[in-house]
Length: 257
Image (cartoon, rainbow, N blue to C red; front, side, top):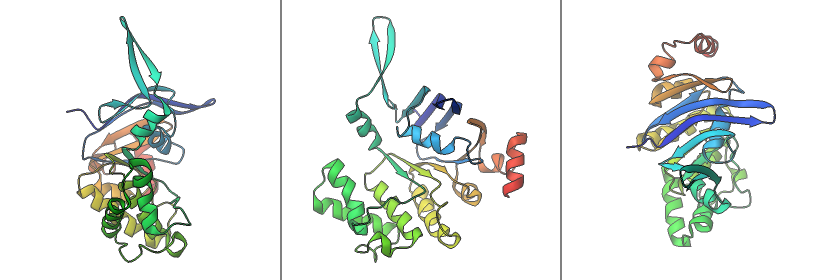
């Protein structure tokens, strides 16, 4: 069985800035992969490349057996890579849920309507089906009593839980979390991490960029430490956090733990 995510020799340039420098990484189905590292190490850029919010400069990203953003065209004995159409990339992206630092909820819509919007517009679900799914997800994230509230009436932690429910409403095969607690007041972090732990326990494949080392220790099947666009070290939480082999990894955890 192929891995859910296969990243091979991925490079990303922004002009002259070489942000990803040949990243290789595999994430198995049902695995929680937590990516740690200093700011500017390429962690968030890697997530954005996985779901085609950024185009890679070189390499390959395969999700659930399908090459992301590109398609292979064989002519005679040669195989060329061609850019997929925008419509096909949108189809690929619809299978991947992403939760950002900022919640980006529609301010003029209720919590319920925020979660219902994408399944209705993208999947073409009728209102009854979308509502049933949204109610189920909002209950799961502990917001059954906030369905008719607007984002401005919710705390930051509540808004982020709505954002998680909204991503799950598309029934994704893979969830990406880009520092989902970094914009929250410290006392609100726990409620979002609790929902993420619940999701991990359900068997969802997850890639999580975070500074929450405790979450990595408790939930991660694989911990990846990145620095300067490279995967410096990876393994279990006990290996990477508890007994790092690389000096750069040891220096990092000496400062954050």
